Length: 189
Length: 185
Image 1 (cartoon, each protein chain N blue to C red):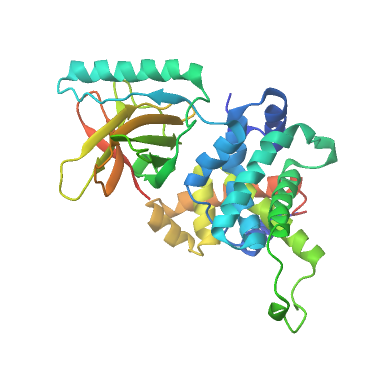
Image 2: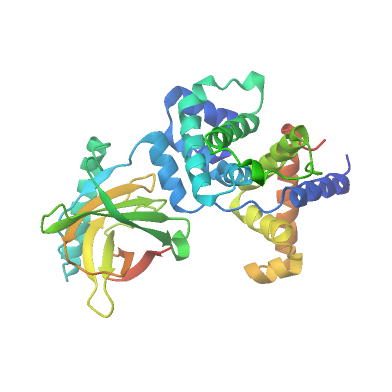
């Protein structure tokens, strides 16, 4: 077949096939978890936000150590976790294909709620950096909830807690670099 | 090893034999839109379609050991998995009330023609999603969004010549893949 003819045939097939609908970003994480089981789990209950560069490097090292250790406990996340509310985050800028689901649990009568963030498609943070989940209500100061890093597959589940009555309307994830700079990488979808 | 360069058949064998999560990820990236398109067309409801897509990919993971490349292409197998998952969901749906039945037969394609057309579109969508990113974006803008090559160049801030080169290269790659799948001669 001549070049022109085969190109014309391919063009016809493309037009006949039409534009496929794009599956929602969060479906990747759900389908992956359904097939492969939950991704690595990182548990860091409190976030210390150091002001110095050395402090940031130390925190990043701690996060990476926790990530490595978490590889040994794949599959333990989520047991007994009752989801009260879920929000979906979508990647921005260079990580537009990344996504996350933030599950907020019920208070079960206690003073706190469990929060579990399922991240997918987010490359590991640059050396000395880490990711941080934030929540904010209106004009109040943002609250950093959990620092984490992702595995080589770009996935991780990070766990933390928030006060039972903590109000919040916004939620996002930032990349905190070793030089102190910050970029928002995931925002509400 | 760059798994994205592997064929569907090789990826399915990695999933089957080594339970390779990375191979599964590549299959998901290559087929998620094609599977979602088939399921949406059959099931309709977006929320229900998400459940079916989730089940379809879980089936790929579970059933990959049953795939035999001598019996057909990986794309055909993935299509069958998707249709079966959607059909299962439709079977579970509450029957349509008699009063809702149409008065006339559907003048469109018959069931076999629909299946053939669906399989062809499925293979085309998967082939597009297997292209390198820089070729895929120009192909999609030109043929799915209907932009002219000049408009594609402007949208992507690329020289027109680059757009033409990438388009031609992408079409050639699609031709090769779709010929393997017997979608084109």
